[in-house]
Image (cartoon, rainbow, N blue to C red):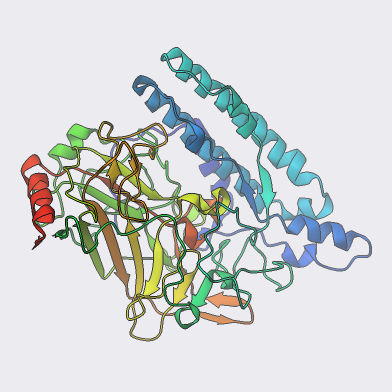
Length: 500
């Protein structure tokens, strides 16, 4: 497979991370230092200290980007760049966490003194620069952002509570437990990387029907209002367009996502693409009027395959290893509103749904729903489903469909959009636009789980510190439909017709 490239500029922090990761590369990916056995040998009174050190599986940092609101337009590029550097700092710290297990086992304060303390100082310097850039551009920076500089260590089984979403899957040990009790090193799941682990999977037959309890991702379409649909066929990335950029969240930053994305639709989508580039690009969509970009993190089968990015940033150098799995089908459908007509999306509207950092951020923005074909009434957000033979793995995402009527983006890339409310209406001040619904179907051999170990698991690409958790799945969209096509989409939906 290939990847799209153009002349790229890489921030210093990213280069440092890549260099640190390269020291540990081997066998097709980042091979995490495995000191689990030595950390748990019984050597008298040292055993308790060593076990305590081994429990720190990842690094949990407050998401500064989600707390920023008042950023003048002319400062957003600089602020996004600073936030991307902050992500690189977390990745760097996580690499150090994963490769210093012996030192941690011998010193209960090693993580705090050698990793978390220095990380806080570096984050504080970036937060100071962000505040300065906002104020210089005429905005008013939040004086309390400094409170977000500190990070903490977190066990792999301890997820932030973002407000109560539980998917009904808390029974039968599905939420983990003592990660030190099963003989599994959280830096190595037995397949060469830190996750997923056995507790990240659930047999689809054990998921209760209609149990998904999510505040987000509500389907906007219903029996009333605008009941039509518009489906656009953009393929399944037959052109092998991959990169680890994120044009929405980290424009102008190489490897801003720290994981690899699948792209369909627009064929000139990387961190350095301007709106003009997007408008003039080719598209994989059958309707050439749709040059929108649709992208999501790739799924991989951790089977030892050496992919094209096995030694690259975003790929194996950051723990994303194995065979990239393209969807067998990618359905991109726009639907209407339960409460009335929809209006046209503005060109270049940007929408991020889900949260790539949900494992540490909490589930407040989690969205993607996992299921199996033939079991669509059983949906789960925080587990990967184990599907029976002949059943496909399904990833389904319903995007925000309420627009503030003014902005194509916002400082935290979320505030200009909102989900529909329980009755299908938009919050006050927002208006309904066509809702994008993405359904991806995959042919994946079912992983086996035995004795607390998962063999040949599949997993979504993620930031290294997010441990490939399914709840971190997310989806991105930039509207680049021409005016005539967007009007056709709106008219079709409002007339109650099914079009493509």
